[in-house]
Amino acid sequence: MAGSLEQTPKKMRPYAEILPYTYPALYEGKQWYIGFYAIDPATGEMKRKRYKLSHIKGNKQRRRYAQRMIFALMDKLDHGWNPWVHEEPQVVPPGFVDTCEKYLEYVDARTKKGTLRPDTARSYRSYLRVFRGWCTGRKQPVTKCNQLTKSLCAEFLDYVYMDMGASACTRNCYKVWMSGSFFAWLVERDILKEKPTDGIKSLPKSKEPKSRTIIPEKELVKLKDYLQRENPHFLLAVYLLYYCFIRPKEMSMLRIRDFHLANGTVTIPGGFSKNGKTENVTLPAKVIHHMLDLGVFNSPASYYLFSSEFKPGKEYKKPKAMSDWWKYHVIKDLGWPRSHLFYSLKDTGITRLLHHADVLTVRDQARHSDISITNIYAQRDNQADEKLRDWSDVL
Image (cartoon, rainbow, N blue to C red; front, top):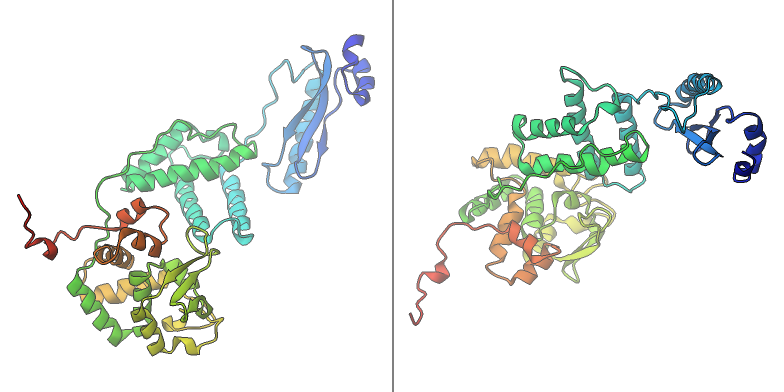
């Protein structure tokens, strides 16, 4: 034993000469844990053993839990138990509901500090709400995190795909969230040893076209006439989506100062753009003239472009308000099918612009990273192409 003690930390040697272990103690700090030393028979050295407590919510609860665990460990050590030889004491797994609440606090904190986009955080909360509701509503409800197994996750994803009727893409999004965010967070905090979704494959994406459809030319004319009469300020939002391919979320955050009439451009700040980049988009003369007619530039530069009644103002208009006005006014009053979504304007604009400009121009105006993404938005209108009607070649 003497030779072995040479490898033992100096401050532990007095303990090793009398007892093959030290008494457990609670350590508080960035990481809360119960720690002690014990002789490892394989090496004859004193090794430190830790039991992490960060998964337990609240300092008071952690201390209470630690006190009970320390007494249990002391009793086991006094009766010859060795953590490097015998089975480790059973640690009560953290509660599932409490863990979900802590995860939500983490998501909120990241959102407030700007390391997680609000839209992404909203999706995470939605995914968790569905997953948590399913887990707690089962015949054998999930109450502890150690019940989160691979088979349970596969069963939940089947529920999303078959019972909820979600698409393969939506089902895969749930899996990506579970693996890349929720379970990754659990593993980092030693609540789980590994991700239960490991080995669960994503489903191949459907080759069916998008549920939203392009809007025919005659319907676009009706839309323009209708909005000029009913809501010309909302017509500006339509123009920005159709001609500039600016997303509703990005539109809602634009301010008057982001528009540059001299250059004929609008700047999309990276702070709220989808790709996180600050980029300029060309403003067609038609859009500029409509903005001038509305007197938009008479407002202070700090005003949001869309506020109350879709006019410039101090408070921004949530992007949902745009899709809601489209749904409850445009679709209803014009008698359009529900497949003509507000976002259909972007598909329609890209499709029609490709008939007038080269694909690289369209790609840059839409701020796509690759032409293949532009092709996803472009849809065939299934109508005869007038340019081909009289085409005749040497054959």
